Image 1: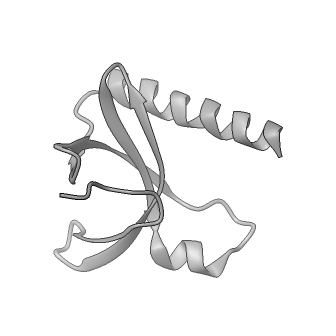
Image 2: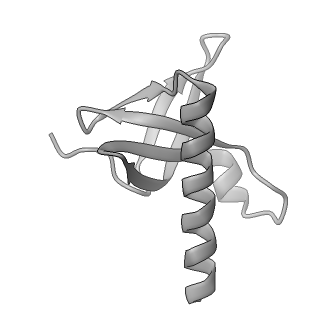
Amino acid sequence: MGGIEVGEILTVLDEEDREQEIEVIGLLTIEDKEYAAVAFAEDIKEETEEDMDVFFFQVVDGEDLAEIETDEEFEKVSAAFLEAGEATEDEE
């Protein structure tokens, strides 16, 4: 029971039941709930300047990912990750 960590690669099924590898690129706790930002592992390996697709999930019991159920929750989570990313860039 190690929990999900940044840099961890997970295998998920897409809408067409094909396996896809995603990599955890960030974790945040918002209002006592943990959330993960993930991207396709292949996109991260390519290291291109193009925008990569980033997805947000709620972390359940420290080791499972669940879809965010409401638009309001999604907006709050995406804004928090954006703010955290900007803060990190400012530090560099």
